[in-house]
Amino acid sequence: MSKVRTRFAPSPTGRMHVGNLRTALYAYLIAKHEGGDFLLRIEDTDQERYVEGAVDIIYRTLKETGLVHDEGPDKDGGCGPYVQSQRQAAGIYLEYAKKLIEKGEAYYCFCDKERLESLRTEVAGKEITVYDKHCLHLSKEEVEANLAAGKPYVIRQNNPTTGTTTFHDEIYGDITVDNAELDDMILIKSDGYPTYNFANVVDDHLMGITHVVRGNEYLSSSPKYNRLYEAFGWEVPTYVHCPLITDEEHKKLSKRCGHSSFEDLLEQGFVTEAIVNFVALLGWSPEDNQEIMSMDELIAKFDYHHISKSPAVFDYTKLKWMNGEYLKAMDFEKFYSMAEPYLKEVIHRDLDLRTIAAMVKTRIEIFPDIRDHVDFFEEVPEYDCSMYIHKKMKTTKESSLSLLNEVLPLLEQQEDYSNDALYAMLKAYGEEKGYKVGYIMWPIRTALSGKQMTPAGATEILSVLGREESLRRIRAAIEKLEADLQTA
Image (cartoon, rainbow, N blue to C red):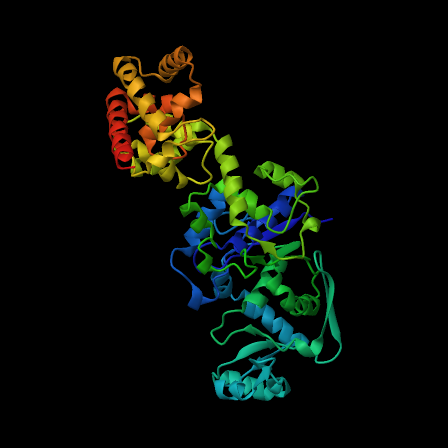
């Protein structure tokens, strides 16, 4: 068996869609699982859709996700150029199109826009143009005269109109189509650029690609690809068509959903490793059903034969859970460097942000969650005094007011505001009074935070806020409770 060679061939049209990232990832994993090569090729032949800066996005995304290409525009492995516009300028596509013309497998088409418009027909409520092979019947002299006169032309594939074409896909099996459905697709456009379909076939062959990974929206084009391979006498590569990715409503994942691209997800606070892990599972799962996997584990376990035919649902909730697992396992220094900007967004006091970061590390799923977890460190939000009532702790508004009045002098006298010292002091006070620890801590934590849920306990919050700010908040809480009980 020849060395496995796969490629990722994106068009520079903007941000990296999740579907494109999955294609790149699967192509990379197939190659690396077999010790093969992963190539990058830039398909920029559609000049109208070209977006400035999009090539940089492609390079940046591959680098950040760890999908290191073995060959590409910046790493010539002997199959260059790896940019289609450069290959077009070198005349590669026109050369191969003319070879097909010589074999009778393609032909020049000089039909103008008006004639093509006249061929439009409606099929299943959709207007399509089915070319009638008009120019196939031009004599050699007519073709040469048109070319000499500089008449605009395209080059079309000459597909049969009878019989069938069968191709094999590793996921969907053998698929047979009637040749009457193939149409004579354009290979070279009037501007001299190749179509996506033709350039792919020529480039994949010349670059020795053994496995072609792409979305299943290209299934219908595959018979045309196969006919091109056969017309040239080339070996057909292994096809791996991936299932559609849908949103939770089972609609095609689109830009409107807000998380359709890699950049969208980064901006929403997801980490690269979690995104890659999650995307790998959009249509595939390992035999042991392991979910959290490093890149090395993905390479070791990836078997494209286990890719599903069914649409893959982009489960945003699952992605958040997975991201949370990665944050829990993350090295603290790395976590803090990524969390710090979010902390500084809501905390402007001179507080120990590293300690606060440690509090939230195992409690958040994405970095923006930090804001709601720690904003009380800056200022206590408005809250209802009913928050002091806790049935399990057996606290009421009255008991909470009484307890805060009791512990206030103790906190005023306390000089050591470390967590351990504060906890030991309040625990001793509870033992003396016959109070359970929770009965003491609930009112204090509520007074300090004004929140039902906090990333840390009362003494940890006291320690971070420090003596003066903690006392100010306890006194304010006493006043709030007194006012509430007077109006009750």
